Image 1: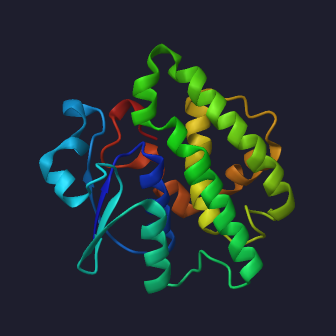
Image 2: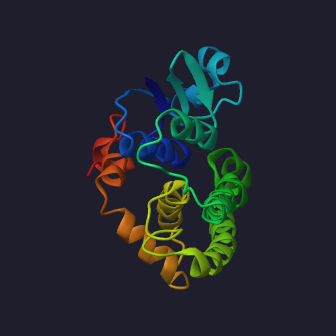
Length: 210
């Protein structure tokens, strides 16, 4: 199993958490999104993932891209521990929160968009994340237990932690989001979230290592 990943990519981090939780061993092939004008734009990588984004996962003889598609596949083929609740209502809530982050927040503040924003990029990222977090905070007040949905770690949590990391990188004030902050802190105490953290990847620059 091979994961094409970039240490700071939040989409890659989601998949790294899933692999760690499910105890799946894998090799990392780092794809540096900044170096050489972006290694994701190489002809070789484009042939594998036409969207020219990380992550991509080679597993069971197929290559998958898109973090949630990868996590769904891992869930279908390696169901322990479960990342989607059995209860249909809770399952829908997990998907709703995951979608809120992966469609409603992350793409608006990712590298390709920020490149086009020039010197406004920090302000733009802060605004996108803050408006998304206002909705997320309100949603979590209805669904959260210890984690995003009840007391079991789910796909929603795999999306939350990397997004909070991005928010902190862009110096978003987390004061208005006590529920997000509390859940994030609880998750970062779990081994799978520590192992998969951007500060502990093979391609993490020395000065950012934990």
